[in-house]
Amino acid sequence: MSFSKLLRRCSRTVRLQPAKAWIVLSSLLLINIFFLYLLSAHPSPWVTKHGSFVPRGLGRGRGEGACGPLRFADPPLPVTALASVPGSGNTWLRHLLQQATGIMTGSMYNDSTLYTSGFPGEGVNNGSVLVVKTHSSDPEVRGQFRRAILLLRQPHAAILSEFHRQHGGHLGHASRQHFDEDWETFVPEEARFWRVFNTEWLQFAGPLHIVCYEDLRHDLNSTLSKLLGFLNVPVDRKDFECALRRSRGKFKRRDKSGRASENHSLSEVFTRDMKRIIGESDVKFHEELKKFYHRRSTWLDPDA
Ligand SMILES: *[C@@H]1O[C@H](CO)[C@@H](O)[C@H](O)[C@H]1NC(C)=O
Ligand SMILES: *[C@@H]1O[C@H](CO)[C@@H](O)[C@H](O)[C@H]1NC(C)=O
Ligand SMILES: *[C@@H]1O[C@H](CO)[C@@H](O)[C@H](O)[C@H]1NC(C)=O
Ligand SMILES: *[C@@H]1O[C@H](CO)[C@@H](O)[C@H](O)[C@H]1NC(C)=O
Image 1 (tube, helix red, strand yellow):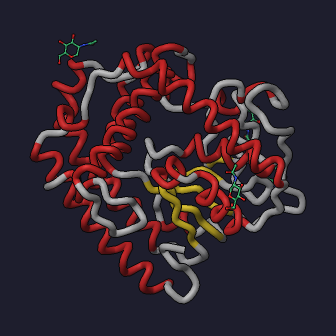
Image 2: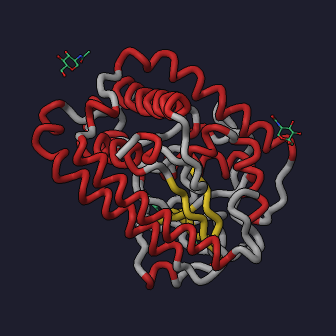
């Protein structure tokens, strides 16, 4: 399985040239480096438990990290899922949406540390919040929502990110020992989960908007604009620009300082077999995605 196949942009069946693939690969690596740095530099109870990403300054309401005060949606909005496999950048997207709209995002879960770190809608599962986070693709869960956003991330990056989350602890990343013990069984299970979860959400009966983590990273302006268009809430131009500005600043700063702490290259971490397994999941899912776009082509253009 070639890297170019693994690294196709998630919503498009575009094959990257090898040179381009390495650029993407390096940026993916930098993203992971940056997560790892954040985690190792600032362990908190939530990070210890989840090992995932909360932008700094979020807990201060109107403070440094916020573009404005957050409110509940009133009148309520159609109940909207934000569905993703863990490790796909769900928290980051919630943060961006909150910054741009001033409306709280919710969750099917109630994580007390998220609740107190800039996500006061955590635990709310109805139209009072802009979107509701879920990591479940059960039909009963899907049936609770009127609209849905499916957040996709390239499988190898999501799998590695989730592995670090589960094993990270205070240091924020899985150790060599964890890789030796659990990685080999973890990868096929997660690759399968990635495929099944995303495929099941394609069966969602209502309006479904697919957003790619990689597109958010590479073209936040237009990717976020389209997503906000789908959500159909009024967005203040100043807030939107603030959301773009705040997001970029954080990423730039942390990438730079985080670089030194990374010690895993993707080619080192994924064996040939693992790449093959992930690649198969990826290919199978993309077949489903093609069918989905075909079914929905009257109202949703994948490249629009
Ligand atoms: C979520 O948990 C916090 C305490 O951690 C609590 O104050 C809040 O009311 C809960 N939210 C919901 C919607 O249950
Ligand atoms: C949504 O849930 C919250 C708490 O769980 C509640 O306070 C609020 O009234 C609910 N909103 C709607 C529209 O049902
Ligand atoms: C975002 O895109 C719009 C339209 O393409 C453009 O007018 C605006 O300047 C862009 N904003 C930023 C911050 O790049
Ligand atoms: C990186 O991993 C190698 C083993 O694969 C180890 O020998 C080396 O000390 C590690 N470097 C850092 C900075 O952790």
